[in-house]
Image (cartoon, rainbow, N blue to C red; front, side):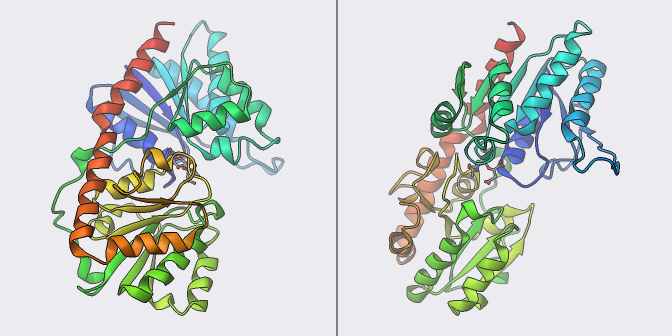
Length: 374
Ligand code: GMT
């Protein structure tokens, strides 16, 4: 099939999922067209059946806000017509589903019909989309999509509670392509980060308030009192400075390494011992799943879809949002004993294997076929 994928090309989970999906579909013989404003970060190279089409929004002084949706829907019309695309798959409802719907309408005028699938990722529903500024448009474009998927049961439930949805929502979980994960990664340079007798804790996110970075620092503060350890933080965002300040105040700034945005998380995950994800809200927690795939157990909050990913007492532990005392307790429990840590590492990987791309990809393919025959 020829599939156009619209996504955010950044480090965010929705962009990562969309990119990995496109790459995997191309390996199964589909022709993929990424349509976005920058080459997606996880898309290292283009191939004969992976194409990237840049959406350009020229600056014009009259516009206080540049009209991205307009440029995106125009680009979609051009790409779909030129490449005879069969299906349009938009990731993250805002504004992609809205722009996709407009492209569909423009194409209809030329007797071209193209079905659209919208994948809901989380903040497009729970944080941004639920706001009255956007709600009518998001509600409208979800209902106008030919298929709607959500990355967890929890997100589906939230969507149905927040919006007036007439469409069926299929749950298609996020996934891991295990063919990219090698056991015994040969570039695993643990010694550059920590001493041999130190444990390594890790947090990866966009450092936004929803991630509760202050809790990451507090949990590490509690852990390092009992267990010699380092904390690595990957990613960047508005709460970066606050996190650093809290760390100074607690006297542990020298034990925390801020690495900024990185596309090489496997180099760090390969030697990490524990992943911290104490988010306020998390529709799925792709970062946690990626950690588990690299045998890193997870201490997370018990919010949104996290309980569908992190198995309590198996791949790590789930604690109430803000319950840093319990998070510290559980982190120490995992880290204090070599044998127990190894068991949790093994179970984290086993749990992650349930999200193997080979189980998930056919779900998307079946839906593409279904909407193409409507
Ligand atoms: O985690 C973020 O804040 C980024 C956001 C995004 O839109 O990329 O992530 C959302 O989608 C991911 C991929 O489906 C999920 O794994 C994240 O849980 C979800 N984030 C939230 O719900 C806060």
